[in-house]
Image (cartoon, rainbow, N blue to C red; front, side, top):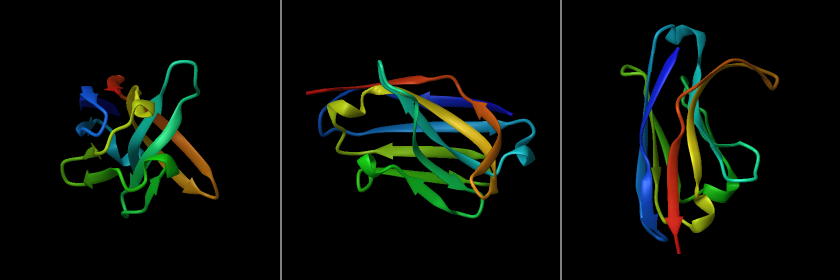
Length: 120
């Protein structure tokens, strides 16, 4: 699976950005697409994900501000980020994986990172 991400950039606090990611290749090997982020000196964390069936997971720190959407026909996943805060500054990675349930996940694929910088 190849993941091609776009979007990101620099914005002032309170602004908005949109990230997009398109998957190609062996799409059947994944059933979840989403976004991770990694800030300097911190571990990579899941921001939001959405399964083929529509199950959505969003980290508490972005709830009410970020919205994830998927197009299962086009194999794309977008992340609309509103009311951005300086603490949202990070490299954002598109991700695809297969969730087997019972907290088992396999077949992780990563897109190239895209920088999001929020200034105060």
